[in-house]
View 1 (spheres, helix red, strand yellow):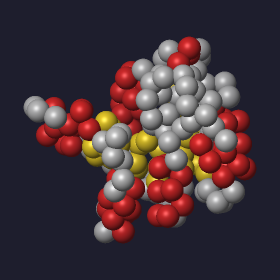
View 2 (tube, one colour):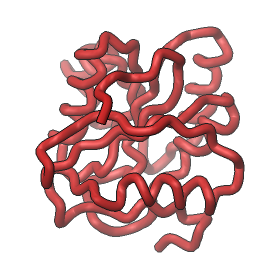
View 3 (cartoon, helix red, strand yellow):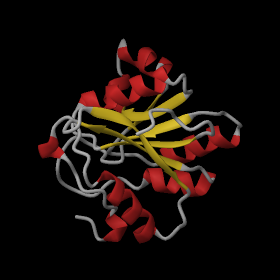
View 4 (tube, helix red, strand yellow):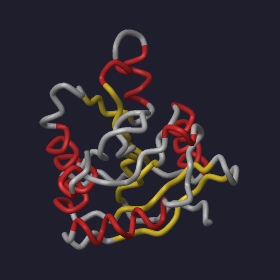
Length: 172
C-alpha cells in the first residue's frame, strides 16, 4: 500500500478503530506525510489541560450525546477555504457492535470531498492509505466498495473490529 496521503483535501477514514493506538498510528502517518489534518474526537478529550493540546493537534470536539452541529462546523471550515484532511474514525467507538457513524459520508457528499481509506492492520503489521473514492450518493454501492477494502483489515485489537455498515443500510 502507498503510505502517501493524497494531495487534495478530503476525508481520511481511520479504520478499523479498535484501540486508541489505531488513531495514534493514523495521526503519525499524516504527520510523516506532512499532511494538514483535522480530526474528530470525543469531547472528553478536550477537557482540562488536554483541551488546548488536542485542538493544537487538529482536534474538533464531538459530544456523542449531542453531535448535532459538528457536520455543519466542518462544512463551514471547508467553505471558508481551509485546506486540510479530516481524519474520521467512522466506527465511532472501539467496540465490536453497532453501525458506523454516517457523518463522514454526509460531510464528503455535502462538501464534495473525496474519501481516502486509511487503515491499521495488525495481522500484516502495516498501516497506510488505500484508494481514494468519490462517493456517488448510492450508499449501498459506496459502502460495498469500502467494505471490500476493509474486509481483510483488523486493527490493533481484531476482536473489536466492526463491519463497515451504516445504519441507513440496515446496520444494527
